[in-house]
Image 1 (cartoon, one colour):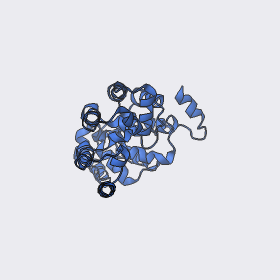
Image 2 (cartoon, rainbow, N blue to C red; image 1 turned 135 degrees about the horizontal axis):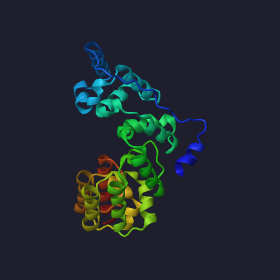
Image 3 (cartoon, rainbow, N blue to C red; image 1 turned 60 degrees about the vertical axis):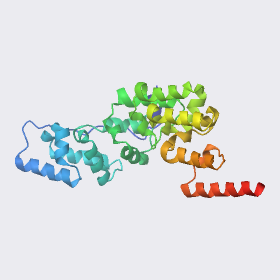
Image 4 (tube, rainbow, N blue to C red; image 1 turned 180 degrees about the horizontal axis):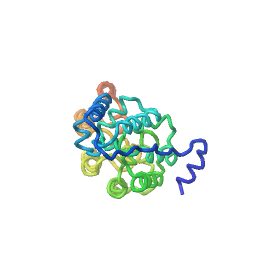
Length: 275
């Protein structure tokens, strides 16, 4: 199994054990409850929203919340980052973050200094089931040849059957074979974050029908899908058509608006010189 091999490669980094939890059998007194609210506010967490979305928080002792902050802080997260994450996902206030953290460190495996980047970019990782979500997603992504790192761990919260596979199947439906699609994903992992109907399909249709392109060019430049169709692709294509000019996709899209205008003028001058 992948996870077994990776853990054996990291003998110096033992698996973390969850801290002991304190259970309460009676409701907090008024003073203790107020202290808990003040503590949440000190982290810039909205107490009203947190209690509404996570009723269990009402009976959670303050010591458990402090322990949670200390645990997340020990992995390199700053206090403002911890507060932002917990405010976004109040369920984390009463959950155990260590199973997904252990998974990221030992099965991905993610270097410890990179962990704060991953968690800040995608706090949902901390709420995801290792068995039902994270491990199947990692297995699928690695089967494509993708090396999961701090910038792509957000893909681990995507459902394999309903989210990841449909995008792969769409790319294959264009006539690309499996190795070609896998290489496209490795070069541009952001492809797997895009909607088929709202992003991939409209961009393919515009490229093939309006721009007269071919699938081979998309294979060579999968980053095409990361650019806005309305704000960048269409306006720049229109500018080229109006001037009777043409550019390969990378030269058309990878430059800033100012650089594109300069390039357009240079191409116009070069054409005038040849006349």
